[in-house]
Image (cartoon, rainbow over all chains, first blue to last red; front, side):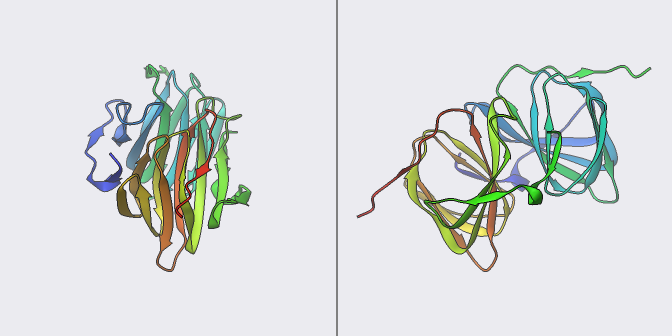
Length: 119
Length: 119
């Protein structure tokens, strides 16, 4: 690949999420070191508290959300940059009336998503 | 870091560019595997043909540009995804009346920028 229109890349629902879909914009077979994904969370959607074995580097493209990272809770919006270290619990809740959209880059390393039982 | 407002991160002029500045949003000391930078090219600005020893994964945030990558010349705009392999010559020319802005992620590996003499 050289150029893709992000809107033309197929998306898939994220099973652990609510109203959350993901597009792989640059996958591990295209970029040798890290992948670029775009997430979209519909109003009211999000992801429950979970860990990943890889860190996330994120950039907010649109909308607003509340994100929990470890013991911190932050409000984010367009043009905010978020860093989530590997193995740190995190969750997302889309806020407001428009979808929350962000890029999420991860290294090409084995990843495991583990949901955290909140009961 | 957990969250940064991109607009609050200091920028620096890119010496090899024209009307081109760069912000390091997540640097090598913050992300263990790759860095996130944001570039801004003023109307009429850009970068001459050059190579880097690391690949680029890019996402266009605003504006329009013409980009040369190897033997290809492409027109890009907001929400386009660009992949520039390591060591492939590439150049940028901002088009239109608004700044061309894009994210550019690179692995945390030694990089050398080499300008290509077009004479």
